[in-house]
Length: 240
Image (cartoon, rainbow, N blue to C red; front, side):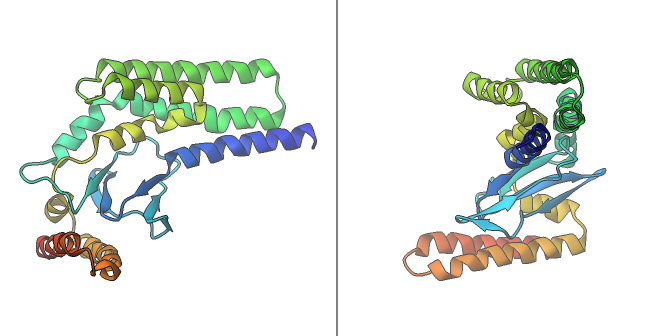
């Protein structure tokens, strides 16, 4: 293997590890409340199933996009998140979102380019140090807001360790904060209020397709299936 081949593999490995770290496995009853321009959308992950869960790979070029997981089966009653609450959450973490973009540019673009161009190693080291400094600044913001984010010490230390010790994980910091927070409230009710008719219909059909996966489990799981049927009736009524 030539040095160029090794550097090419290293560059590809950096990008691949970033993609692997950004992927999420959703349970059958999980969906995502995701920002889209100035609006929002509610959607399920992909149809790709892996050991009973569904793979969701976010847009690799948009690490600052808000995407909050929620459950259509175990939705909490009462007032939940509205667009204004979600915008406040995203705005409160704008330094982290900006840092994820900068860290992504350094780790996923600049470092592979320097590896492939065989520049002076000093430039490579300087770029890595810059990425670590950006990551440390993001973690400082998260540390100051850990109470509002409901992060205990163990969760914060886990985020800090993987972001600092594995630079390809750093651009996913905001995504992980979104995953830890989750959507608060009923995502179906949110969709009914804020999605267009065509999007509501698509969401209803997607959830129906997921519910159909439970048909084979009707025998011997009556209680769980009954809960699912009640949820299906509620969803169809809300999204009509």
